[in-house]
Image 1 (tube, rainbow, N blue to C red):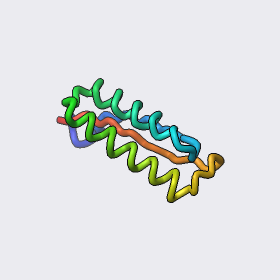
Image 2: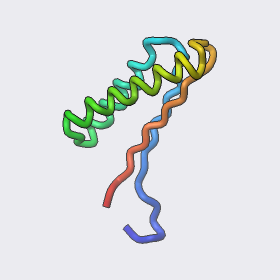
Image 3: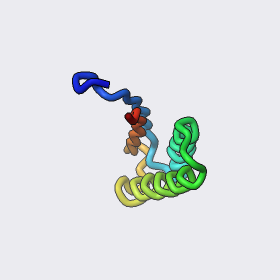
Image 4: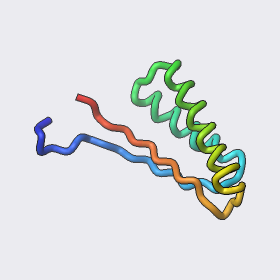
Length: 81
C-alpha cells in the first residue's frame, strides 16, 4: 500500500437504546467481527467483557437507563500491513 492509499477500513455503527440487555447486541456483534478477523478465542473473550462493561456503564451511569437516549458503539476493522 502506498502512502497515498488510505488504509482499508470497515466501520460498523450500533445505536442501542439505553436499556439493560442491549449490551449483549454490542458484545455479540463485536465478538462475531473479531472471530471473522481471526482473533484468538482468548482475545475474543476479553473483547466481549470490555464491550459489555463499557456499554453497561454507558446505559446505567451515562444515560441513566433512559431508553430514548442511544448508546453509540463504533467497531472499526482496519487492514494491517
